[in-house]
Amino acid sequence: MDIVDTSPEFDAFARAAFLESPAVREQLWVDRYEGAHPEVFAAYYDGHGTTEGRASVVRDLSTVRTRVREAVPVERRLIEEVEPKVREALGLPGEPAPRHVLLVGSFSTDADVGRLDGKVTLFHCLEWFHTEEGMRLLITHEDTHAWHEIALGAVPPEDDPAWLAFYEGTAIRASRAVVPGRPEDEYFWYGHGGFADWLPWCREHRDELLARFAADLDDPSATDTWFGAGLVEGRWRVGYYVADELVTRLDRPLPELVAMTVDEAKASIRALL
Image 1 (cartoon, rainbow, N blue to C red):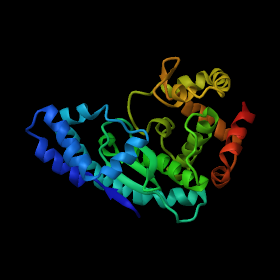
Image 2 (cartoon, rainbow, N blue to C red; image 1 turned 90 degrees about the horizontal axis):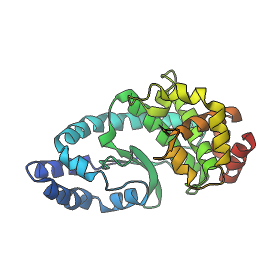
Image 3 (cartoon, rainbow, N blue to C red; image 1 turned 60 degrees about the horizontal axis):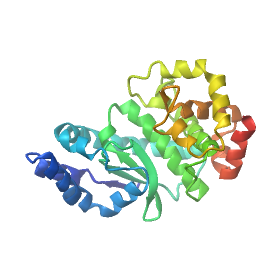
């Protein structure tokens, strides 16, 4: 299994930066941590990673360093445990397989699928580690995306609401298949607290949400509203609930879902709405 672990360089940076001011810490981050893996961070920032949270990381360096040390062996073990199960659930051959990168990503995203040296790569952001069960679900969800993109043979669109509903709904369905029996809200929030009323609210407003999503299908900016940092009636990530509802209604086996082209997938979601 192809796993690139940048945590030793992060720990070396943290040791060097521990007694320095925040400003010096940020420069050392660039020089000693990102500088040790320039190709990794170039690929990461080319996706959804940003430098906006770097100040938070260097300010709370001791806490983040402890969390990263705890995360590395657990996340490596979970990747090795989960990936064969994801591949089997999706009905895909063993090769080509995704590359995995363990890094500290400044709290900009918990995980992201991108390309490193032309290979589908899943970037795991260690600073988000919280519980083993939560991380198992997150890794399963994101690993499904990685294998799905390998099956597609291309980078899928990021600005089409119908496609993202299909893409995210497929990953949620795969998570249930690979990690069954978890509380329902964990398939959307991966064990993070503070969202106990999110799923009941979505269920209560189901018909309204589906109608509103249907009205946004031709608006590329709606992808952020439903799946990104935007809000629907004051709620984050409501598109994931909609995605789960729609892909469940498709009622197709996972191998059939990942075998569909982008256009077929988009058409199948539109037909439901």
